[in-house]
Image 1: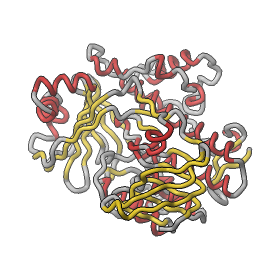
Image 2 (image 1 turned 60 degrees about the horizontal axis):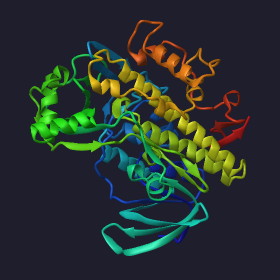
Image 3 (image 1 turned 45 degrees about the horizontal axis):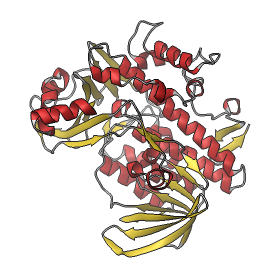
Image 4 (image 1 turned 90 degrees about the horizontal axis):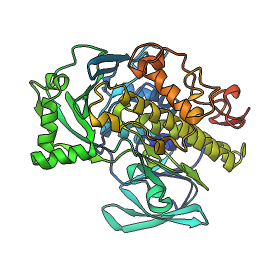
Length: 462
């Protein structure tokens, strides 16, 4: 391994591989350290169409399209007494699929291998043990081979992209600035089934989302013929049920029995893996950047699996981070300006989704269920969020509102159908002209800066 690199990326998931690959394509020296050897298992198998333009810019989309993943036509919701569908429109000029249900082990390996092909020095099986700092600025990483710690070393760098996932090297070990939300304190329990039935309605290859009592299920058809079936429930109620029923498995299977939509898909299916569990996974770092470093993907924040936003936020943060670092290295803008732009744009994307997910939960009409009430944003959650800034480019008609609480109430009311009478927040979102969230034109500049792709990826002055 080289002793010094211009840019060090920690983590080879979608955020890290995308950032490293885009930066290498911009002509910079990039080294990526990944703790695992790929392919490796990861949850988060349902992609959104918003990933496609970024993956096309990375030059990896054709490889993904040729990988044999399950085309995803949209989503179908069994939400309380109502049923909703969301159909994805193709983003490509050829009218082809814009979203996929993927096996993450294969998908992530395609991205990491592609980063290597475009010039990133990739090292797998290497764990970052410690960072050295010059004041508040990280300047070097001590690494060791995961399976042979005696093989170790140190690598210096000018810029750091921390894409280390939930482990969050900077946020959890040094900054200590990760905050868990008062909402979304949930448990996810999931397993894989073979011979599951195809959903008999909605878009082809859609993810099925079905509410059940105090929680909801996802059902994701995968290209290997299995279906990922996951239960999301409140942490306290899940743990109480686990104690009462004697384990995770009976809680999971009882919930399936209580959910006709999922039960119908699994009536002739066989469970082929044990139940996996994660909890308290919704969080955000208080800052996504600092001197010489950016936090990307899950290392910065994670929301909730309801709208399948994990890979979207990971690749989106990689794109913005590439623009910020590239413009600083080329001397186009200062580091403080670029870092502030990254912070504002990435946090707006995150907070916009935070409000949308909470509103989606509030659209559940069985108000007697504690789980759905518990997903509502409290005053503590939205104080400090710039809700207006997050939405003034997103939903028309609120730009003149000043009071944060009133902005949130108006957004919530709009998404819950106060004007349209429709209770699907996604439907109401699409009934209004959706402004592009990203400041990609001078007239949409933030603090006089906007994202540009030509002739190079960067941040330009309006």
